[in-house]
Length: 373
Image 1 (cartoon, rainbow, N blue to C red):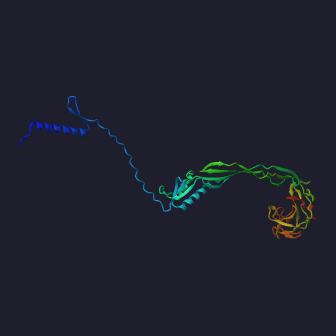
Image 2 (cartoon, helix red, strand yellow; image 1 turned 180 degrees about the horizontal axis):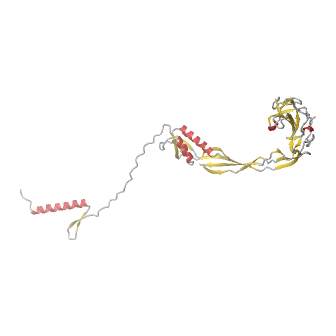
Image 3 (cartoon, rainbow, N blue to C red; image 1 turned 180 degrees about the vertical axis):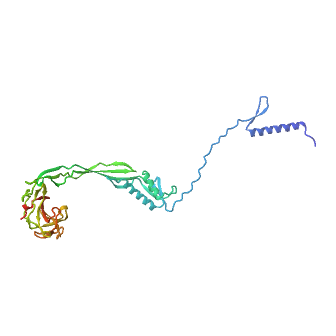
C-alpha cells in the first residue's frame, strides 16, 4: 500500500484540531474568535449564576376525626362551629341546661330572672368531621366559662323596697293604769317598690330600663293610749267603784259568773293595778257564763291558770280565770247562766280558791261592777 504524503497528514491534523475546538466551544459555552493576526482562539463565556429557591415541607394530611354516628355540630350564625356533640338529643339538652344556668346566675335577693334566649342563631347540623366531639360536662363547663362562645340574652327584674318611718299619735287614757301603755294601732311607714328591668348579653349588662316606682301601702301612724288612772288609795285596797266607766253596753246583760262576796275590787291595789274583781268560793264551785257570747279562747295564762274568754260583741269580752274541768269548746256559743267550768282548788296568786273576773271593753279592762246586774 502507498503511504500518505506529508500534505495529506497536515490536512488531517488541521481538521482534527478544528473539530476539537468546535466541540470545546460548545461544551464550555465559549466561541471561536479570530484575532487581528488571523489566529483563531477559543473565548470562554462568563459563567451563569444559577439561583435555587427553597420549598416548604408540605404538612402531612391530618388523620380523619372519628365521630359517633349521629353526631352534630352546634353552628353559630352559620359561620363557625362552637361545639360538636354525640347526638342531637344531647346537644338540645345541653343548650336547654345552659339557658337555665344563665338565668339562675342572675338570681339574687333583689333581682329575679324573667326570660333567657340565645342572642345568635344556633343550628344543629350533621357533624362535618372537622371538630372533635366534646363531652357533655366539658361542653357545659366551656359555655359557662366563655359566655361569648354562644351568647345568651337574659332579662331580669330588680325590685328594691324602701320603707319610711311611721309616726306616732299618743294620748292620755284615764281608763288605763298610770305607767301602762296600750297600742291600739301599730304604725308603719309608706312602702315603695322600685322595679327596674335589666338585659344581659353574653354575661355582660347590655341595657337598663327606666325604673318604675309603685307605692304598696301608705304610711300609717301608731296609736298609743297612755294610762293616767290612779286610785285614791294607791297603797291600800280600792273601793267598789274605782276607775272610769266605759261605753254603754246597750242591750247586753251581764251577771256575776259565780255567787259570793267580792274580796278585792278593781283598781290600784298596794301600788299595782288589779284589773278585775276577786270572788272567793269553794274549789269545784260551778262557773257560769256572765252573758251571751262566743267562746274565743281557752288556755293557760301565767298566774291566771286556765282562762276562758267569752266575746259578747260590741267590743265587750269577759275573762274568767282559775278555771278547771272546762265544759265548753272554742267557737261555742253560750248563753247567760250556762255552766262553762268549775273553780280550781288553788290560785297561783294567793293559794286560796277564788274567781278573778275581768271585763275588757275594746281591749282595755274596766271595772265590771259598772255593768253587772
